[in-house]
Length: 117
Image (cartoon, rainbow, N blue to C red; front, side, top):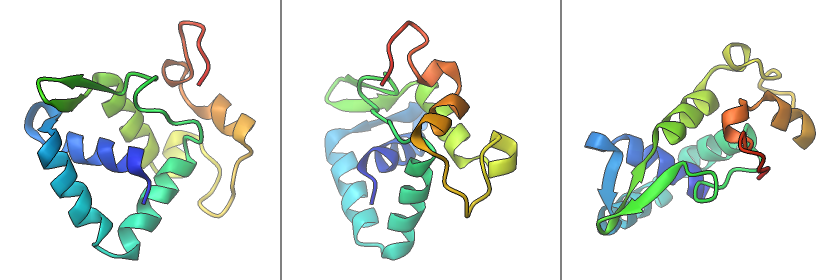
């Protein structure tokens, strides 16, 4: 199970994208024990953004005893979930080299302000 993708998926499912830490832990425990399907799904999504760092890329923010997904986090999750053709990614069976994957990720997620993950 990819921890960071799971966090994004959990947060986006809550109203206003906010969940208390206790809720996040509970939901992660449920998903972690839900079987191989979830682990494979999050692994596949994470492969589309090899240098994912939800904290340094400001995809989530910590606030009031919990975490909230940002608009950037929502956009990146939408990008990761897009079909390969929609996202301009190689086919499902092809694996892009890390530098090729980086070029495919919108500038917003690769450090538009001059930072690279």
